[in-house]
Image (cartoon, rainbow, N blue to C red; front, side):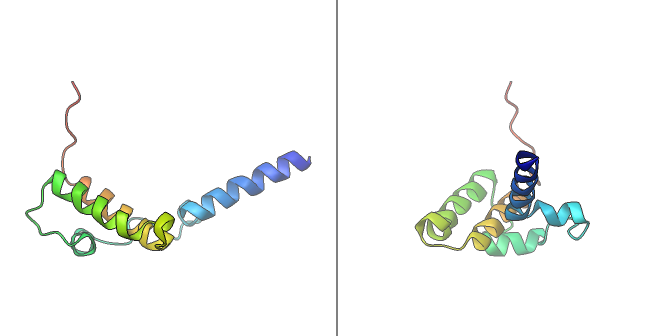
Length: 95
């Protein structure tokens, strides 16, 4: 019984830490930013290609990652901006 309660607490903690708990509770129906905001956050223009987005993301994460003294919330926003922008480009075919 104790193990089951510990497991449930761990799952809830994980969902809360990753921000997925809000999605399950119905309070977050999509990305918190649009494409224009994502480009502004990564400091890239509308002409940036996939490689430019990845390069800008790596540069921003090297400065704002929690392991180097940055904020976890800012790192989450940077990752979200990358995901939004990379979702607008077709993925490379791995064949």
